[in-house]
Length: 335
Image (cartoon, rainbow, N blue to C red; front, side):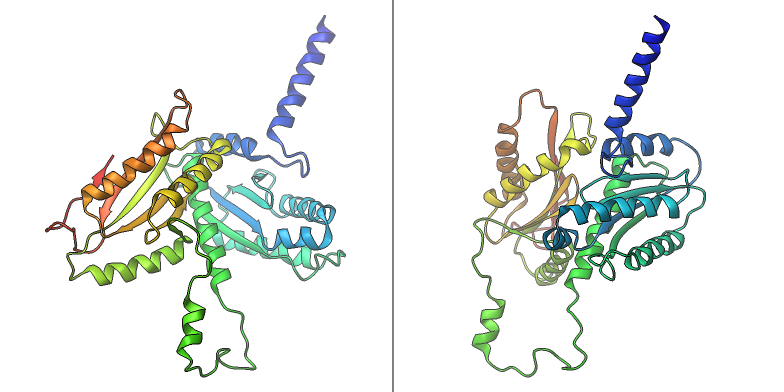
């Protein structure tokens, strides 16, 4: 009897371990990382949360095959474990995204140095398909007093995406030709370059940095205008006001993103602000019109949910510039 009980305990322990760990790299998986970091956040002292995204990983898979991609993931996991402290929490939280929660006084400068060391070791490895090509985009944030896992992850994820967008937005340097466009006075050609080709039906979805630049342009234009424009923050939560679990959040965000694209006008704009939020910009509307828009989107989205889903779509409105579309500057509006 005792042996059978011990065997069952071992089996339960093994199954629990499989649920919390990534089958390929043997690191924590997303749910294991969430549990381990949530527990660590309850302890006193500082902490540093790092997201590492392997650049051009899809191209490597396409060029060299998934076996080479898997080998890179395993090699990266091994080097992270060797470079960071054994007491740090290390996980693979996405296809090519790793997470580290480092304690013991690890600073951002130390983290960047360690990732640089990992990059150098990978580039000098014997794998021809990897050598010289590996690089990482990082999102690094320090633990705050009121953090839970969701807020910590979302902050790092937002920094990671902003860093990735900034890197991809930089034009490739061509020092031998000077300005790559040269002198151009062909306005028809310039128009063709600027013109949006094959626009999708519905609203215009952009990355956050582009959204921010467009917002600032619109804000300047509206300072001496009665034209009404609003930004709207839409947040997916559970019925207690908390972010949805990471395991289900992305699927619901994808559904909401499609509803936004279809239900907003072609001249409106939206972007993913965090892993559980979208930010919208609607032009030529009053506060009441903006509220009607959000109600229409909310009704469409919630109509597709199960009645007992416990999912709430919250929205917050705020005017852009000084225009209100109805005289006077309206106050922020929350639902």
